[in-house]
Image (cartoon, rainbow, N blue to C red; front, side, top):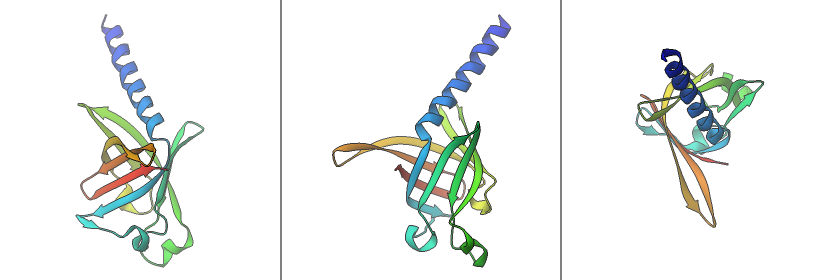
Length: 139
């Protein structure tokens, strides 16, 4: 009985996160980015306003945008890291790690929604951490 309950709980957690992952795979366009409460200009403070969540050979990879923060960041437009998700107490969380720009190495509360745009409906993701608020739409 105890093993059955443990197996059921583990399965629910796994499939819950797996369904979240399927929703968030892909390229996201950053619409709003706030750092420590101050809104940054997507077009002036970043080289690109996209990030890409993907799975390569069962490894969760994210390509982060690069902030214009000194000469070293001008050599590339994206930096690569890892991501994972979890669900706890009815909330969904997304964790990023491995980014060169430490502001991205954090756990974010993730809120998924959708909005009507023209004739279609697009997915919207809000990511909230202690320092960052980021609102993005799926490309």
